[in-house]
Length: 437
Ligand SMILES: Cc1ncc(COP(=O)(O)O)c(C=O)c1O
Image 1 (tube, helix red, strand yellow):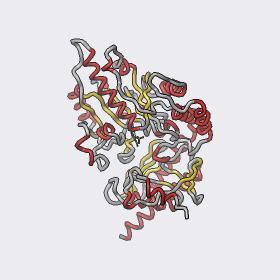
Image 2 (cartoon, protein in one colour):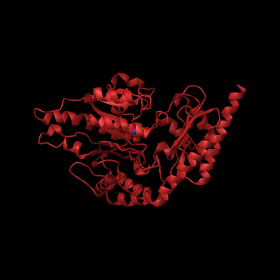
Image 3 (spheres, rainbow, N blue to C red):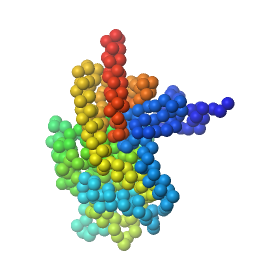
Image 4 (cartoon, rainbow, N blue to C red):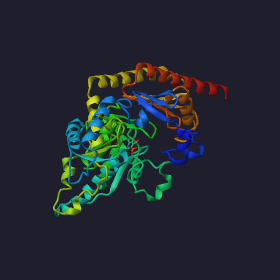
């Protein structure tokens, strides 16, 4: 008898972020349409977390699929040094004016982590190049890096180094470079943060931050005006500001980019996830002309020696162009507004439950903590909710006891109702358990 896909998977696959000892059998997904995923038996699941936060227009979108097919027939891939191609150039031309800042160059890579790696390398080498080229007035070399506690910027070594030290990074702690971590700004600490930057600013090469929303760190939302104050101070000290918009880009926070909520602009921005509508792996690191120029030289040592086999893959760039077409359509913008409004209304309806803490929303992202156990990733509430949700035909993946809902923008009203109803069911179930225990 044929073995099921799940059984075959168990023999040969090593899944990400998965403890295989107590693995729930992975669900074979045969098809996706809109916000729905369909398994082998035809059962549907609402993708309430946009497949790890990437999918913005729904699954298997026919417009993106058609554009990909046509591009695959024309050019599937070509080395991106010594060659160029239309999808990469057009995408850069279209992205640059949309980004919140004075960006003039797009560097392509493969995913969010590589977009961050590139950004850090650009910033570090920017300062090194200055010291190699300038004359007697050359700036003192800068080596320190500033980042926020609770940040998450990816799983490669550089990206891990600038992320909060955590369960994820513990096995590698001796191999991560040193970073100065500070709390995200609050009315209580902002003066101290500004003072620290004023006093030590000329030692810092760069400052990397997830604007407004620290996602993997627990869907933590923080204040735009306070971040602006910090950025103003950092920019005053010529610290290169790196906005990691890997998650917040492409409408997630209600605006096209989270940087639109800020008056202070970044020097470098990292993009991925929604960039291709969640269809293909692609990373973008955008830089200002000032940074690009620091790499221009007759001295080849000043080159940015970074690239990947699939840098600027034409299919991925085409998917990004198609996704951008869809994103800028009035229907999509209306959907983002619709989600934003519905999340805000739902929040008000759950705030009165004592078990719900810190109910919050930013654009299309809704989150709250359930007051059960410790606030940590390994809190077992998360997997338990995932199991219950699957039974209800919904895919949710809480971060420990932090429950969040982040759907594709095309999710229907009915599907949203279903997810909200399930969340209320969860809240009531855990409230009852607390009463009886
Ligand atoms: C803000 C942020 N930066 C970087 C990354 C890493 O992206 P990737 O998983 O594509 O490597 C993530 C992933 O969740 C992220 O949320």
